[in-house]
Length: 73
Image (tube, rainbow, N blue to C red; front, top):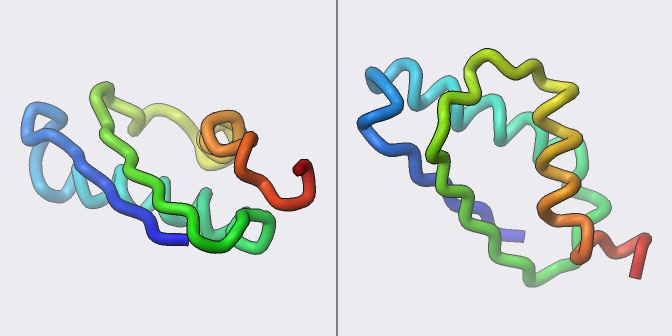
């Protein structure tokens, strides 16, 4: 699985944008084994997700890529 991130400068400073990317990466790292090989994912962050915790973010990420999870196909 290949993953890409885009976070607009409108979301804040570089520190904030990098934190957003790190949180999403951590959520994806926990579910990486469940995803089919060859999947390319691009996350374009358009809202401020800094107030969301890791558990909630993981649930939202799973909802987005759920159709591509290998154990559910």
